Length: 398
Image 1 (spheres, rainbow, N blue to C red):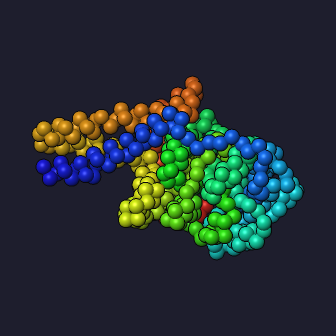
Image 2: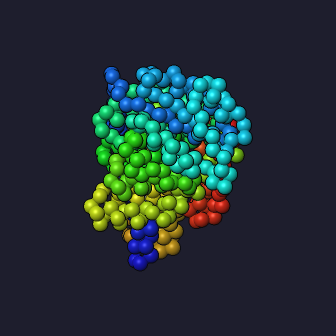
Image 3: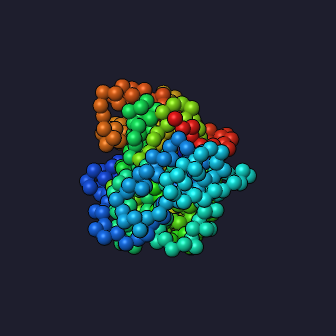
């Protein structure tokens, strides 16, 4: 009996909690619960697009061009590139397009977090109403600034734009990542935002009203600086709104090498924060009666879907082992309950596959996704156990 209770507490109950939470949000989204706005007819906020860039000469021109052609009054938008420890032509490409460049050389403190902190100390002296942080390889959708302005006009101070995957058909790896991004953004953050729950900043497409930068500055310097800043904001009861219909275009990793670098960077930072802050945030939220803080801790705890799948697999193996080791009515019930998780999680994954869209090529890729997910889970597990010795590095560009 003790072993059964232990199994239920460690595996069965957490698995049901996660899967039912996912499905609740999917159902909410499919029923029209999402954070979207019509573009503002008369934009009023001056927006500074801040683009941190480290050796991005291959991709930055396309992103800058997308910002220049955005449908937004030219006198209300400005672009600045932070050329951070660059050894290539990133700064010159921006200058040739008449884009302002701030050059930073500090090899002892590399990374996006340090670059943003350094830049915001200077930019806050100017008179912009809001700042949009955009990665150098993420072009901006033409109507996004107008939609962002509408949210700002409504009094929101922290926003996160949606991501539109541009290369889901390139390889099994990029397709798997595309399904994961759809599950996380369209079927997770979008309904959570509308319901007033916790949304996590995801690095590119972040928007801050100037009052946020004046109050908080930028003090997050880890390789998960976006999640770190999310925690700081949520603890101060700042709501982050996810904008379902304002997009930045993102390119997923296509090769195992790209995936390993990208996933290791993500897992090293976020798994570390999950270990140290998830339960602390939940307890803090309970003590203060703040549901959003509780939800943020829970979100950090279930932030890696490959790990959730791995936990689900362990739940199945545990139920089978209990039943064959000592078959009782309790172990039979546990096995039946564990098996019922499979169709529930399959329904959740199917929602992501359907939302992204399916064609002949993607169906072929779908058959290869288990191997990709296993690789992602291995990287996340190493990071969760503290074995990932990561130093800052960007994803290779094609």
